[in-house]
Length: 355
Ligand code: UT7
Image 1 (spheres, rainbow, N blue to C red):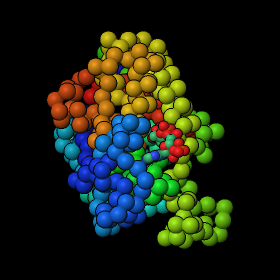
Image 2 (cartoon, rainbow, N blue to C red):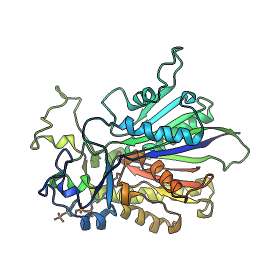
Image 3 (cartoon, protein in one colour):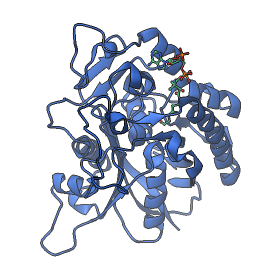
Image 4 (tube, rainbow, N blue to C red):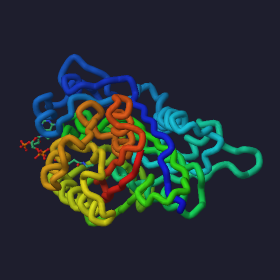
């Protein structure tokens, strides 16, 4: 039986560390100022979110989402022992694409040096838009493609540059303190095995569009001409160029759906927590994850988090967290992960797979 196997994993975060102490002093270009720009503080951020610091790309206009993705992809390919030219499909999950179109997967393909092989047969490129749930949605796609025999080497990437869209002011502080930049990637391929628990064992993806306006970044309105209808440099007008969130509603839906999704994953697959080595929840807020773990009765020593030092990197959180703890020697090849995610849309889902 053909099953999907995780062949390799990699991640990348930019060098710049932005601590909770520094964040109140950053201006709209995230340059540190002498005077406080935002009314926030380390105690509030840590108590409400668990976050201590996050990473930002430079603000000199040189680094986009596909650049972070490239670093993570190259590490995943090296881990898998797969040459970039052997990738026959790229799935790129992001809410912060390099530009409006084309999607970021083709930019990544070009940066990997595998665009246009001259014979008209270079790899397929997909962009998907499920925000914090993007990686699990992408994993379901990759799994289906591979089991169907459509592709043999799928590069799945989640990458984000948040720092350039955040509102560095008291007006935007509820969202601004949460997010960081980063990328994670996996290389997936087929294996022929009789082991029904091998590789990617389970994926389930859900959505509730009635929550779409509870967490969004509007940026433009295609119904209007011109469809960008404000001066983005004018703070009185530019609310739509920053993410907006009804934090309490998102929090409640995140806890509820992540609990139900994780429990459903075990029930549907006939597994117990004894069969799962690690629970990897999406990294939006440590309090959300602690509540999910408490309500779902998840063994605390199986939970992996990175939000304390990377913040919320949206589509990148799952591979970034697995790879971080793999680098620390905690996660080992063959360990079975249950990843559960929730994000804008609302979207959510779970996946069970061996790393
Ligand atoms: O990845 C996608 C999913 N995203 C999430 O899951 C995020 C879900 N939501 C959350 O994590 C939380 O709702 C937040 C961390 C965003 C906010 O925490 P909260 O406990 O829900 O706080 P709140 O929004 O009720 O705000 C409480 C107070 C307010 O002041 P008043 O009205 O009580 O005077 C806010 O204005 O805290 C204030 N506040 C802040 N104070 C200092 C909001 N943000 C900040 C801040 N620093 N950064």
